[in-house]
Image (tube, rainbow, N blue to C red; front, side):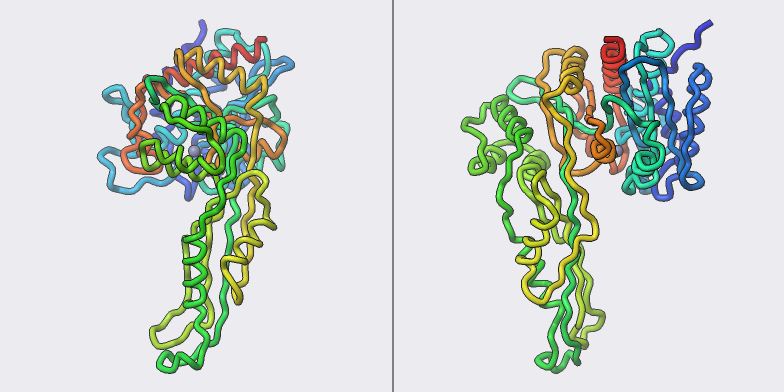
Amino acid sequence: MSLAVPPVENILSDLIRLRTANPPGGETVQAHYLKDLFSRFGVAGEIVEPEPGRGSFIASMGQGNRSLLFLSHSDVVPAADDWDFDPFGGEITGGYVRGRGAIDCKSLTACQIHAALQLVTTGRLGGRLILATTADEEMGGMLGVDYLVAHRPELLKADFVVNEGGAEPLELGGRTAYFIQVGEKGTAWSRLRSRGVSCHGSVPHLGDNAVARMAAAVVRIADYQPQTTLIPEVTTLISSLARLQGVPGEVTPETVDEVVEAFSGKAFVAYLKAISRMTLSPNAIHGGNKTNIVPDECQAEVDVRVLPGQDQDMVMRLVQKLAGEGIEVSLPNFQTPTFSPSESPHYKILRDTLVEVAGDVECLPCLSSGATDSRFLRRAGIPAYGVSVFAPGFDQSLRETMHGRNERIDIASLDLEAEFLVRLGSRYLSS
Ligand SMILES: [Zn+2]
């Protein structure tokens, strides 16, 4: 007697009830759940636990020349106490599954599990499918994918990866656009330090005020308008969106802002601006501690995000120039942007499968202004793509519940994503 694969909404409900908020993490509890579930279907998985409680789960199924990795993260961000329901209740009601991780990204994990077990039980695996549910993504991935790539690379070796990313479908000019995430901007977090001379606040001309100098530097950085830089994927994306929306004109570095501002939705316009230039956002400043003391030191942190071709030297030179004299600049955290080709057989099979399940839709490559675990795999030479197959007509406001309150997802979207993954796995691994 063959075992029935649990419905995807039931798997998601179980996952939400396993508490894996990071910090502190505790992802091993989910790794054990997956190990038990897969073992019932005859699949032996492995738990890799670099620190107690911080386990990732990896299982390999089927055999053949081709290989595909289903990747998702098992940790979630913590939930505040202002929700209208229990964030860790995993309640299924009114066509929705509710709780922390329902969108980011236990939904994807549930769909990947469901699809993998479907492929196993129906014998549709002509190649190797790897499922990895990894820890610590929300705090940088050091104990998850970063650790696995460094210490157990053989576990994640695949022709390509399907991970979180992409975006909700967009209705434009009577068409629906879906997105496949092919790349991510890099981070170049910059630290500024000014030093001055301390003295009593009643005789300020005696000293040299480090806070005042930093304040001027921070204003220059905040006011700076970086030049627009269009990589080919972004030109394709914005041109295609403009065509669908009926916005005239060619997309060039000179015209891109005009085109982008013609779109509706503040968040959407901000996103398109973020992927068409370097961004610099001075987000923290610390200096001085008493009203009557002229401060001799001040520090500021600037969140700089870079596009391909913008390296550490370029950022250092720019930030130093904007900061001005008397301010030291360092880059304590530089992560290069990462990309996978949008002209590749892997991208094509993702796009064709997406169009097959979602209907007559546009499918466009997109770039993330943030970061996911895909960057570690791309750096290891494995192409990685982010796909979110929400159902057509997806309630856009649900996306805002991600990392926010009352996170939930519709079961129709879960079913569609699972269907997409089943077809993708069977199409790629059996061809
Ligand atoms: Zn996520």
